[in-house]
Image (tube, rainbow over the protein chains, first blue to last red):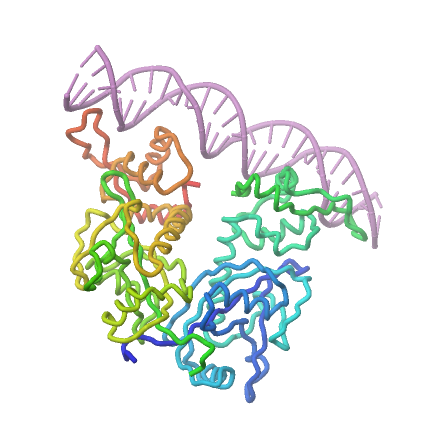
Length: 241
Length: 241
DNA sequence: TCAAAAGTGTTAGTCGTACACCCATGG
DNA sequence: CCATGGGTGTACGACTAACACTTTTGA
């Protein structure tokens, strides 16, 4: 043992975004089980220590699969959090003692972003409770999970900017241009006129108009569209600057 | 001890870029001392294990300071490398044994980008040998350092794109627009006509023309300019899209 | 008939690109 | 006087932003 250098466990934590029907960004939180702690303090980001034969990407894929039951989810590593005091809260140390059957007093984590259609069924093999929380209703979380979430918001915006196509991971397979507009507005600083946005989007050959239109709306029904990833990849350019 | 979960050392490694007078991107490599290994195999990225009271950013700052003697260098964390086999080469294990006086067989690292004016004096308090290598002349390196470098190239391009002002960290304090052009060309896919580049750059109010001009050139002497960070921050916008 | 949103068209202005032209300097 | 690069001007086309206008639907 070298006393000066850290010798520690390493975890991954995943911030999974969804976009709800009220045009809000949401995040998946799980429940950790602890006695003597009020239910509101029981939420946390899904995550896990890394196994001895795992790479970090592999660990994140495992966490996401155990969380949702979905096989292949898009994911992006965005930052390593290693503040020496990030796991120094007594509740957190106590939780790790029981969860991992071992006393852990420092731990560094590698944070991942992921995206999920909010209407997709969540089938967790690991957690009893998995819920969507609108980002402005996320409670106070253990460790530095609130900090991770706030940095993930900056990161998802950069991600959309550098690869517009991943925005469709958050939308249903068929969507209206207004839905796309509202999602884009929630994720981008730039505010675009919706009419011009409509014109621009519908001009892209990888946005395919469907026969279906909205029903039971008190205004002219909007057309549904789908995103064609193959055509997008051919053009490859990022068409929204 | 939990056998399934990794319990490991964590290091930081820094890829420090410079831009030489032949318009090539360079990288700083240090020498590790090992007997029975040919000199060509002795190069590596500057790095260190993290100390027990350090955050990763702090460790990277320490490494950069020990490497160059410069107090504040811009730096950016870009990726955690944690392949279980990244430190499984026998030479590398042997080197860690002597360097850290302890047997280490797995180690994960957090990679950082940094930028340095290539004419700045390097005053290392830790390494005897620190040298600039043009990126296409980087030798085969230990661990996954070659992989880290190739990913850092993608990352520095993204960085320039998202914050144009950091490009001036690589240029001398006074520079010609041609120098800036050549650096930009080396870092960007977009190829711009140099005349239009000139017109655009010189129109920015944070690019200040100096009285000085080139001497001893066999053509009309170019004016020197300097970058004014304060004025840039006021405008804040990224002016090259 | 009204409100609300879909969807199309027009126009003015901005910005990038291409290129012509003149300037300055050393060989 | 020529080659080389500095530096400025112009003109065209593409894209953006603002907004008017028409269409469709339920209440």
